[in-house]
Image (cartoon, rainbow, N blue to C red; front, side):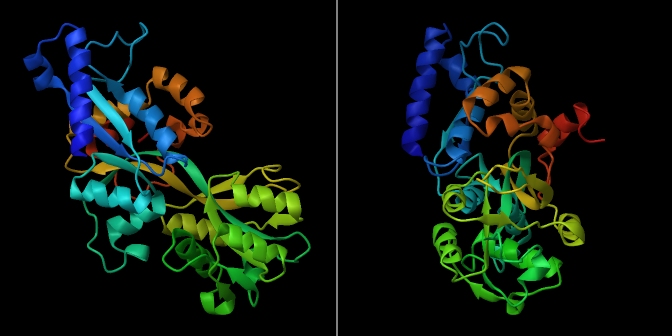
Length: 337
């Protein structure tokens, strides 16, 4: 972090001086803002880079609409790779990072001190800037298994992922919403690739996985075996979405996986969080810059998931309160009545 700050300051200084600003003027005005993302090979990191670019406007930049950035005046934002959701939440709460991405459910558990964060001090200062894109809960079975609903899992061998994982807690909530418990199935604790292999070899009947679609393990499985996505729908899904703010009802389209029909399911969101301690005006301006028309161009070409990051879905499945600055923007934009 120290190295990053020094490097960023040196870069900013160079930009400012090139733009004809004095060192003292630059020092007063410049603001650095970090976004914790995930591993460099995953979706969070490149999306974070696109967003950092969209909200930044270093001193000396050309004007918005004239080839310049439409970001926040004198802000330099940067995407920082991290261990992901839990790491980012901890870094925001401790003040190590200004903001970060996390799964909506992980953030909700951290904020409330429940679920996988049971027994930990609730992260009461956590606040939402925006919902970004969806990560869908896949319930996978073989096509001829006769499993057509969550209720059909009773008495079956089902992988719920490892206890303590986000998938495990989500799977448990889905079973409960459909009148089942972990004791009603023969529970296995397999990760994506191992679960796919076990299903194919007849060692399990179904498994849960939480991922943005299409996810690699299932692309491979669908090309090697006849599988189906079991719907997570009806009253159970409705009850889940109503009880837990972080679940949204959604669909995985037909053809996402080879030979697999569309399926209704629930999704958690990849969302952007900050601390209640961050300045209201700053977060208001950052939120406004994120949803600027110029930022739209960057999001659309910057990453495959970018097109799905829209103001229309900015408040989907939000279970942690909005930052006051973000809330002010959404009210002005008519997204909060």
